[in-house]
Every structure is written in structure tokens, then in C-alpha cells.
Amino acid sequence: MDTPALTSTLAVETRLETQAVLYPMLRQLVQLLPWNHQRVREHLQAEAKHNPFLLHRSPNHREALLGDILPNWYSPVAMETSLQEHLRGQIAALDLPLKQQDAILHLMQWLSPSGYLEESPQIWATGSGWNARELEAVVSHLQSLDPPGIGARSLQECLQLQLQDRPNSLAALLVQDYLADIADCIGNSTEIQEHQQLLLEKLQLHTERVAVIESSLNLQTLKAAIQEIQTLEPRPGRNFNYQPVAIATPDLQAELNAKGWQVSLTSEVSQEFCLDEEAIAMLAESNQKMQETLLQQARNLLSALNQWQENLLKVGQFLVNRQQAFLTSKDSLDLVPTPQQLIAQSVGLSNATISRIVRDRYLLISGGKNQIVPLQSFCTSVGVGGRTPIQIQQLIIQLIQQEPPNQPYSDEQLAQLLKLQFGIAIARRTVVKYRKLAGIASSHARKLNKSKNR
Image (cartoon, rainbow, N blue to C red; front, top):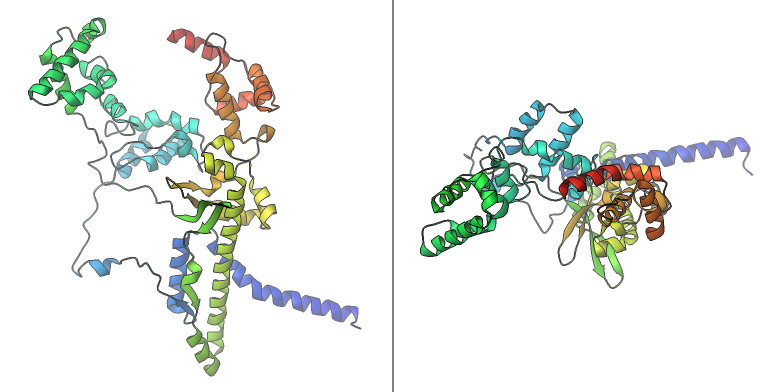
């Protein structure tokens, strides 16, 4: 029978030995967790260059290096100023709080090469520190910058921004109400002249409005206005070098099959690396202690790589199983509240590990039209009545869109309707909070605004 002292000593020795074996692998895993598969592959490639026991198998696809396609004498030309750099200096000079300046900088990643602001406020806000209302509020500041027309969300808005200092011109009226007709009125052919005459007749039907803009409306003044529109820049970003939005690299892929939505890795990096058995055999003959350390490092790294992939799949499959309705409908109202603590408890990982996995990681949803979404968008917090905060805002917006024009719903009435129609027991002050987050004015302000617009 072991004495208490001997048992205690063995327990301490066993615990210390376990920590000595596990700690290096865990340290490697913590390093790998937040990286996408491309960054992980690059890290293992670098390790394989100085670790003889880590073998990099050549994958089926191979990225071309500059040296493969360019001659030795090639020297890259200095890049011209990018659109982002041009805008960044102007944003810093704006008389705005730092938070709003940062929000404009955030919006820059959604600028296309032509200078248009793409996607919706909800997409801009996904995974950021701002809500859709805050980002929508700074769009006008972005559009005030040079070049004119930058940040427009359509061709019409782009041209209107360039004509905003001439709001009462015939050109501005044509862009606002007759933009589709203008395309048929450019040129000198007989058919073009007929279209010009038809457009002139349309304008003459609105004599009161046109009279304020153009005292003598005829074909000459119409052609002059069309020529003015032709001088505007339909692609304000084209004269700048373009720095594209950082590419979202999905690590996980969701596909719908007979069993529902299933998750897989977009790239199994572990299949590209293994232990070099030949190098291990040579080590057994030489019996060098330093080389044994490198062998252990290679084993730890491969173990961490396998654990990295296993954790990604585990978390990804849990989230996809939880959000099956959303994956089918793509309607954010179908998102099931899923806080990170719930994920951690369900898959047996720590909150810190879950945070590293979902942050800046993307999921490819395969189907008729492939879509890439941030994995973090599935990790929605629980709001009132088991709904997410975004869902509550959307329900409030939905109710307000249906309210009588002359009798906007009060916050108390909104609370009652949320309970009656959606089963959400919510206090009036909580309705006020979510209404403001959604950028919706009070019932009194909405009533005044509707009265002015009548």
C-alpha cells in the first residue's frame, strides 16, 4: 500500500510531466486558432524550411511566384495614389468627432473601383463596432469628399452629387426624373432626334416646374443640358489606383444535402504536412538530442494543426445546425440567438477559444448563388423575448411601416403590439431603446414629419 507522502509525490510528478508534454502543443494551437487556412499554411511552410522532420507535400494547386513569371530585370513601377489614400487625408481634415471619422474609414472598404458605395447598411455594420444607423449617418460626409460623386450608391445619385451646386438646373431635373430617357437622346441620327423631341414633349407637360428652371425650353436648351450631363464623371474613382477590399477567405463551407446543412473545411491543410519518416530514421541512427527537440516540435505542430481543424468543424457544425432556418431563408428574423457562452458549453471549449475561432472567420454558403458570411454573424446575443436585438429593431420597423399615417404608434402601443403579434413581453423603455438604435424618431416627430410631407 502506498503511503500518503509517496502518493502525493507521484501525483505531483505525474501532473508536471503531463504539463510538460501538453503545453507546447496548446501554445501552438492558441497561435493557430485565429488564423485562416492560408495563414496557417504559410506558417507551416515556414516551419518546414528549418525543421527537417516536418515534410511539406506539394498540394495539387500551386500559387505562381513572381520569379516564375517575371524576368530578372523586372522592377515594379511606383504605385500611383490610391483612392483610399486620397480620401483618408480628407477624412482626417473633417471637423468631426473621431468616432465618426473612424466610421467613414470603415465605409471605405465598401467602395468599388468606380467609387460607388456598395452593399447595404446592415452589411456594413456586420461584425463591426457600429450599427447600421450610425454608418448610414456618415454617408453624406463621405459623399462630400473629392472626387465629386464618390460614395454614391447608384449612377443617378452619383450624377446628382455632381450637380448639387446647381439644383435648379435643367440638367439636375433630367437626372432626377428622366435619366432613362437621356440614354436614347445622345447622338445626331434621325432616330435620336425623334427621341429628343419625345423627351422635349414630356418636359413641356410639366411647364410649371420647367418654367422655374428654364425660361426658354426648346431643343437647343435640352441638348445643352444633355451635353452638361455628359461632362459629368459616371465613375469618380477611375482615375485613382484601387486598393480592393481585403478578400474574405472562408475556412468553412456549408452545403445542403439530404441530411440538412453540413459543414466541411474549404481546405484541409493537415493533408499537406506530415512527419518525414526518412529524417526520423536517420535521427534514430545518430541519436542527437538537439534533433529530438525539433522532432517533438514537429509533432506538436501537427497535433495543433489537427486540433485546429477539429475545433473549426465542431464550432461551424454547431452554428450551422442552430441556424438551419436562416441558411434556407437568408432572413435575419430567422436567426436563433446564440451567445458565445452557449457555443462554448455545447461543444466543450472555452469562451476564449470560441472567440478566437469566430472572430474574422468566414463561412461559404453553397447553393444556387454562393454567399460568404462572417461566422460571427451567427453568434447573436439574446435580447428580449428570446429575440436578438437586431430582430427586435426589425419588428419595430415593421410595425411602424404599418401604422396609420395620422396616428403613429406610441412607444406604449408598440410594446403592446410586440406582445400581441409576436409574443414578446417588452417594457416601454426597452422599446424606446431599440427604436432609437434603429434610427426611428418618436411618434410625435413622425406625425409632424408626415404632416409636412402631405
